[in-house]
Amino acid sequence: MKIKKEKIIFGVSFLFSIFLGYFIWGIIELEFVDRGIIGEYSKKNHHALNDILRYLSFLLFPTLTLLFYKYYKNQSFLSDIKIFFCTNEESVLEKSFKLNLFFVFLILLLLASFLSVNFSIPLIDSYHEGQRMSSAYKNFLDGSMWSGSYITVGIFYETLSSSIFWKFFDHVSIGIARYADTFYIFIFKLLSILFIYFLTKLTNLDQNKKIIFFLINSFFFVSFLNYEVADVGSISFREIPIILLLILFIFLISRKNSLIPIIFISVLTLLSMFWSIDRGLIFNILTLLILFYLFLSKRYLHGFLLLLSIAITWTSFFLVSKNEFQYFIQNTYLIYKEMSYVHGIIHPTPFSNEPNSSRATKTILLILICLLISVNIIFKKEYPINFKRVIFFLTLVSVGSYLYALGRSDGPHIKNSFGFPLITVLIFLTYLFLKNTKVNSKFNYNVFSSILILFIIAISEIKPSNIFSIKERLNEYFYFEDKIYLNENEKELINFLNSKVESFECIQLFSNDAALYYLLRKKSCTKFYFVWSASSTFNQARFIDELKKVNLIIDGGPKNDWDFPLKEKLYLVDEYIATNFKKMESYQSWNILIRN
Image 1 (cartoon, rainbow, N blue to C red):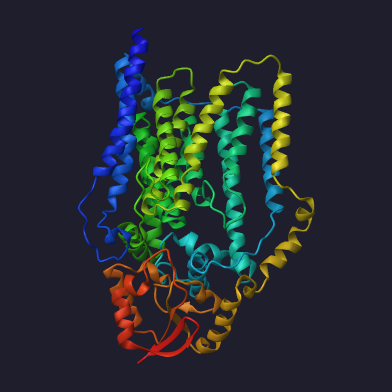
Image 2 (tube, rainbow, N blue to C red):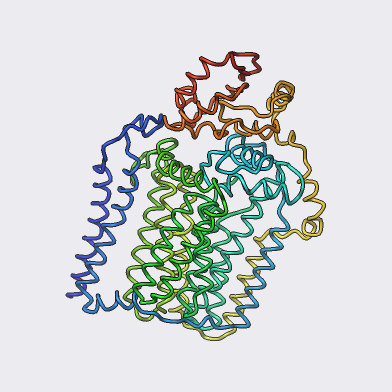
């Protein structure tokens, strides 16, 4: 009766803590500081930290409620916490022929699915694809990185990726740039299976149950993202560094000799920043938490080795990159400082009727469930300790991954944050189900495994004819002319502009249609090829300074409904252009401006 009363009190307290988080969401309102950036935040006097503090508060109160309940109920609370965080326990990643066989089978199945991909030809997204291809084309021509382009996402994702593929295949085309994304999706799926494979080895399930665990979770993880690069999935291939960190974390906690994972983690602290600035930030925060774990578990040598390796990695980049390191630091600092104000969308209040509130509420509640699972299993001695640590680490990844959606809280960004919390819950539920399932015979497992395999094969969309014709199909896809990706208006515009810009070494856009640089085979005269990103007064001043060497500007184009017009957003630049340039010619909604 006492236990029942305690549970009722906890249940009521827990629900109240969620209500408290909801209530505080509405009252957290930091004083807005005008940074001279026109955007939704400035129009509504919204501080960029509001959404982060609201989100963390919403998660904090229910989590603390559970911790207080555990402390009250469990006399060994502190010792259990100490064991979880401070004990160094080596796990044996045992070899299993059957598990290895299924692992190899899934890898081959994944490869066959990758080779079966149909290469669709949707029209070019002049904004998003233009952001990457135009920056990449400038790098392809002159090798410049941060010194030549103002990078908003990451130097590899935004600039080097397409350029490297173009150089590798010795041809420049939209098809090759898009194939790069298809390849990264394949790598992400491959790493997902690898992560589940190593995680499976940390479970204390018997061999047959391990196979079921591996097959179910591998299937779910790889299904979160398909090969249609234009589709928005529950997760993005931009999470590749995070998946790598999850794999390395397993090796770090399960083996005493951790030199190799330490070296890889230290190198990735830098490479993850190159890959994507937001993912790089989360990667480095998680690395810092790993460092704390190493010292808590008295693995001082490994902790110092990780610190030393990170220092060597970053120092080496500084020494080798010459002045690019300085541009990288300045570029990254400005993005962290300004980008939320440049393109931020205020996060919807949970449980409200605001746009995207339903999707946001579902994701945040799922993250909260991950936190509750992680806190709860800390005190469950029947779970393998390193398996519990991976679940806990996955939960931290889930909490961190939602920060991407707080900077721009639209539907696609919120949806992209759903994958990690979902796989965390699925992994736990699968383990819990298999752990508590009694088996009558091995035959039942063999039948169930066979059904799972047949189901995975059936939905893998493997097409033997596509596999055998992959070389011919790729050759055709790579060498499609750019015009096949354009609508009729865009084709006419490119034909018109080609003769006008032919004699210019570089051109400058005052338009969000960044793909024009690539389509016209011209590089940007300034760092700000992605004009929209230069919205702060500081960047507008830099933009104007670089415009002094520009002789031709193309402005105008179709109006967008996703942000404020450039003439309003970059008001200082617009004023400079109006004073120093005049209209030479117009075509459709476009203007060609030349210096007075």
